[in-house]
Length: 192
Image (tube, rainbow, N blue to C red; front, top):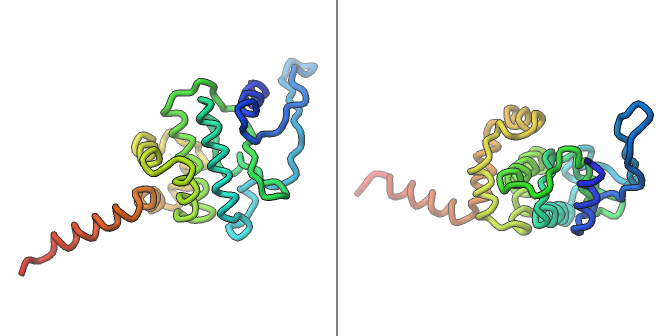
């Protein structure tokens, strides 16, 4: 199954490791051999090691995946490997779904948005996502996704950073929302 989803993603143009062999092992367990990507996951890289171009490219890979109707299902920092040239690759398709409903793809967006924000901050995490998807789809994903639908790792990171969800929502809403909030604060102040 993981091999099939990886092949499907690769055929759609997603940068993902080439499947070399898939089948059953002697005891009936699955066997999957993929081409090794020399690099490190975003999980293993510090904020200074991840430039904005790499973040933007990672979001573009997710956009290509979603345009093919595939949801990754576990799209945290660990599922994005950055090769020695700084190019992101999506890996670990064991939870992926083909012909995935919009809610599953929205959960992918929120999962990666939260996961990246913990590492590089909300500003940088949102900037690349907005370029790949636009503000409205990201806002809709945040509104439609219950944090309980995210992976245990991301839920724990949200628990450890209780302001993060609201910070992401404000960043996704953009400068117009900041201006609207300032107008509301001024209009709700004391009258003269």
